[in-house]
Image (cartoon, rainbow, N blue to C red; front, top):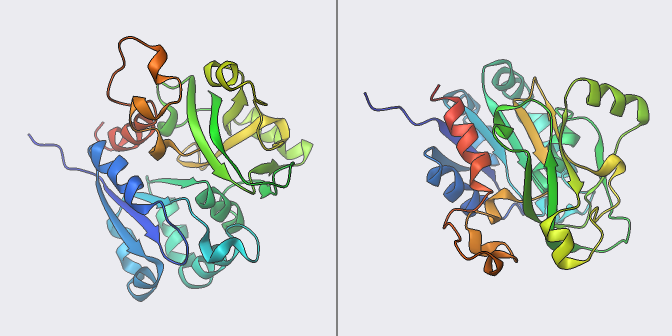
Length: 251
């Protein structure tokens, strides 16, 4: 019996610019991904009920002019709040990558906030990550190296909320020292994120927000240390995150 592919809706519009590579990642992982402009979803809000995975990809929505992810989150909230609540109440998955993570925190479906990097500059490089928490997105992942590209990746959370998140297994990724750290000789926490947090979870692990870009680690040769290994597999470590999401619906 042929397994039915889960359907993925990847949001686009107004400065989001990682839709194509995110679609490629989900399609490569065995899913069926569609790129949908937010205005088209607003015009046909019931469309969201046809999908199992919701994605807010990376980019610079509305130029981040009012703060990263704020304007896009407000547009989504003002027009699609009911549909979003219904989507998350089902057995679905959702992910926000970089600007998408910022959108999700502004939507209030993920805890904390993203502030300007501690050095006040845009950062574009690779980092090492330690995975934690219980989530379909993280199955089989204990550590991973991925690229980042952001100006506001400094995760902020108060201590009490952090302790609750830690207790509830909501810390998805923390910046750590590893192969990339040893190779680059740069700070392992690139943006000053509190408690080294690079990604968080909500809705019993079904919703993931992360600053690093797994869709930019689809192939091993994208990793700056690839040449150091004699036998390099074609597939990059970032693909596992997308495979995990697709496999969740093929149980």
